[in-house]
Length: 87
Image (cartoon, rainbow, N blue to C red; front, side):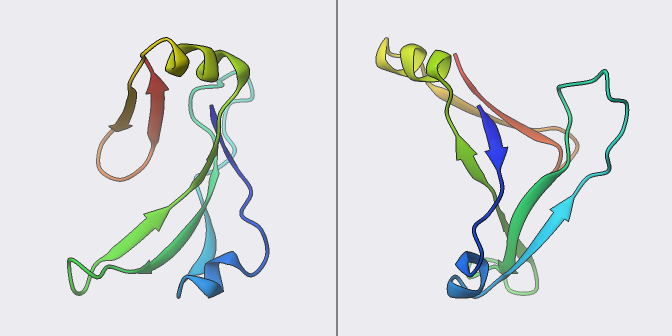
């Protein structure tokens, strides 16, 4: 699975703005990539922000989930970088 670009107007409709977090780094690494997020004020934690990414599942993810796998969100060192895995 991977994060995909956020469509125009979606961030604004959710009260946020679209930002890219991450720098293009070593082209041989596929585990960490820049990602588009919707950033908006948190409703639960005043003064903090909420970060939202749009995720697209691939065929392998769908097969694993259909077989009973769970989605795992990994936040490595805080909010980013992150990964979601079907295990």
